[in-house]
Length: 281
Image (cartoon, rainbow, N blue to C red):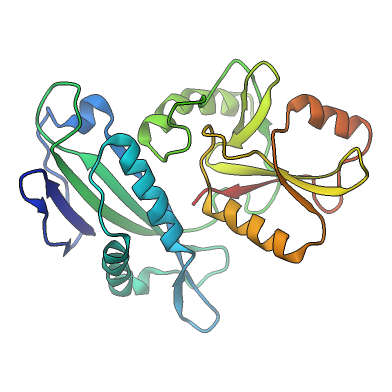
């Protein structure tokens, strides 16, 4: 476990790596009352050559800093944090699984810990990183998942915090996820607005491969308009497909009405692909 403390009076403390232990926090800590908390999701993979690699960790750290700025938490040098992170992974490398579809999950977390009641940003903070081996995100592996799409539930809105990875964005979704599971569905497809814009699914970005009205093969993903999280995997898929230059790649609004129309007119690429999700880590 990596831990780095900060205070307005002393700045950043020396980073420490130690065994995982309980945190001791005052009951008035800001994180408990005003949700001044953010986190990231990263993974370390073991290659066929037995080397351990992280997938574009610099992008995750940039997103972490953007989230910190949105919450009024202190900034730090991304390069120095990455050095600390790589040192932690070098110590934990034996926990990186050797099995297919598995990895070492890395969870940086940043919280306001000042013991003071009152709606104001925290003058004390804690940045820590947990790790643990994981398998596929879904127990079904790479099989299709079923989705609940109900416009009465809204995850984020313009001017809000939907483009930051904050705990306060996830807590209100738990009840809706429970409703999906009650209906024997696995995840929630979040819609927005009267036109039912498709935004994201749970902790994943959406990609749709279709034939547009001009007859072109088009890969569509919702734009970064402030209501979806800018996923690192999303960015990577866009980078790769634009480099391939084999079909049109668009970041644009797509609605349930357009998807229904596309299905009705047979313009969806059912084989091999229609609608796929990519983790936002």
